[in-house]
Amino acid sequence: MRVNGTKLRNPDWLASPRVLRTEVLAGLVVALALIPEAISFSILAGVDPKIGLFASFTMAVTIAFTGGRPAMISAATGAIALVVAPLARDHGLGFLVAAVILGGLLQVVLAVAGVAKLMRFIPRSVMVGFVNALAILIFTAQLPHLIGVPWLVYPLVAVALAIIWFLPKATTAVPAPLVAIVLLTAFTAIVHVAVPTVGDEGTLPDSLPVLGLPDVPFTFDTLKTIAPYAVGIALVGLMESLMTAKLVDDITDTRSDKTRESWGQGVANIVTGFFGGMGGCAMIGQTMINVKASGARTRLSTFLAGVFLLILVVALGDVVATIPMAALVAVMVIVSVSTFDWHSIAPATLKRMPAGEIIVMVVTVAGTLVTHNLAVGVVLGVLTAMVVFARRVAHFAEVTSVLMPDGETRVYTVHGELFFASSNDLVYQFDYANDPAHVVIDMSAAHVWDASSVAALDAITTKYEARGKRVEITSLNEASARFHANLAGKLGAGH
Image 1 (cartoon, rainbow, N blue to C red):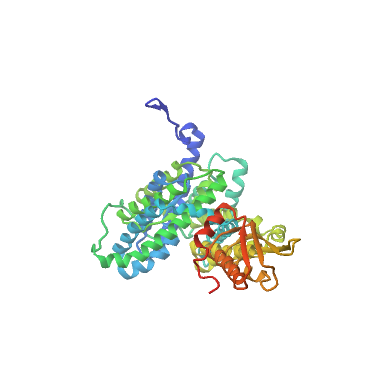
Image 2 (spheres, rainbow, N blue to C red):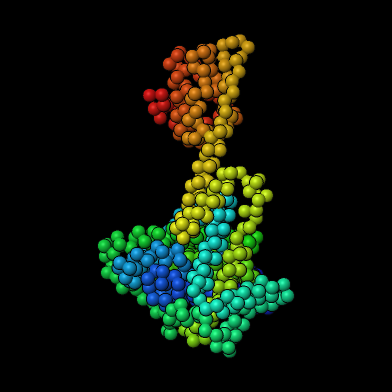
């Protein structure tokens, strides 16, 4: 197709009937998997199940257009539910909805400010910990559906697991999770097996979401009440969404627009708030179903997941209510197993991996599992990685010296990166009392990163000058020289 003489590229799902089929069926599978999750998160947030279901619909449909990562699923999530639960409990649904809208606006602002660029500071060990913690959380979330249930649930789960695991080896024409859901639903309906179903998770809505303003007084007191929760929604939502986008990038070997994803999440939350939803962010489990289990790669699957969800819960609620939870549990168990990075805990890998990297991964996993919040785990992992890196680099700063043949000049050569951790000991590596009258500090093999390093160099100079000796600092690279020139003698070193 051409517009104004320019050839426009058609969407991938229009180029091939096979791709179109994959995207449509993937969207259907995700929609089915979203229902019990959205209901559960609504209960966690302390609101009616329809609030989570409507949020999942509006988030998925909106992000399909605004998001920067095709095939990623955004909907109501447990992380956001945990953030807003106290607000809903203490102030009601109106304040929750207002916080979601404000949180979305903050996400747009953060996106414009370049928050997505911070993703470059997420180390690989934190990503591995994030993925492994995610897999564990997905698996443990299924345990309540396997404890204290009729014994028939266990063979049903086993059959569904077998279908999902072995069917792709024979054919990929239809997503294996969809086949498992349909077959188990048909079996339980025909045989009249009494097992827990989707309908047992909560009442499904029978009407469409309505656009409107939050029922709150538009005052400064309201703003003070919702602002902390809005900040939590914005930060937690962005962190989970950007981490999930990076994970999908790695799985699909493609690169997504993280800045667009950031403001896209904000727009989706704003839209969700005006439709009375509880807000959300990227859903990692459902994204893995869409991308890994079903093979989806385009925005169509995300859009259809939202559309199918609304159709299923509003128009076909009676049918959806009969789906056995065993089928959905099996889908999520397979997702957790395939998501976990088993290579990361293999003995051969652990033997070769530096201890610091292992510690960072473990802290990320532990922090996530203890708090049930992936964002907290990631922050703890990044902070641990910073400490490990600082300790490692601090040992890289070394000083060697040589006395010139005339005996009147000693040249010190500084090697390594100078920053607050490595420059603290720099002052003690010079022989102030016994050195000759002329001292040269050669910085050609070093780099000055912060004010602590400049202060250390000032302290060295001051100590020599107090003994009547002259110091020259030479061979600074351009960036270090500029940094040193701006701060030297202005930091109070040696006083």
